[in-house]
Length: 255
Image (cartoon, rainbow, N blue to C red; front, side, top):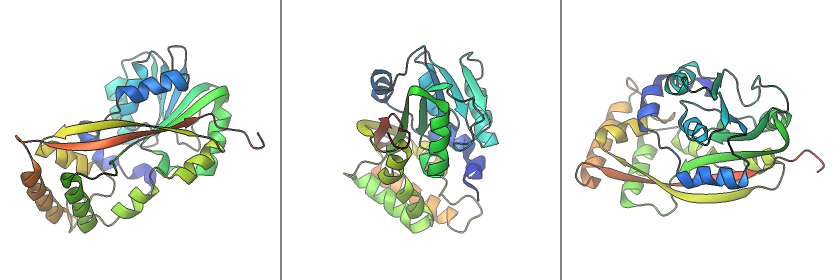
């Protein structure tokens, strides 16, 4: 399946159960990456608008660039009433946006789907001379809780693509190639508190999770329910993350 089509059947779970980003991460974009009410921001691979919504709260004009029709429609339903929001059918490699029109380019949980060389060329075309880029990720912390250790084991048992897809996320070598060298990293704590339906939605929003009809779907759901029963407290579990923000000014070749 093409990367741009992988989430078409997962939009409802994505809208309901994917984590947002901490306020401190958005504040970093304001203090270090020129996010302001005067800025024009391109959110590349904007999905259902989770990050887009936070950027709009800064007062900036935000263009959501999303190739998946179902996810783009969800973002438009969520944010379409805001005058500073524009939705575009495009990709990281071909955004359709005019040259030198963007102050800040961001990608939340999407960079691993990009063709790095083509996305870099497109970013350099779009960004104004003092423009910034920021790549954001919600990743599980390296110090696994008992809940996360069991959740990871569940995925390794039932989701054949899990290891391959997660290994490609937050790949610093690919991100450094995108920036053309120097980039900085800031890390922030983040978390979700989920009941069972929220945890199920969080799992099923992931592109690697076997869907209904797949032979691993029902065993995975049974394992998830058993896992939740062991780790829940008052009907909820805590799903911790660390939010990683890689940022800098993409450099032209030779600079």
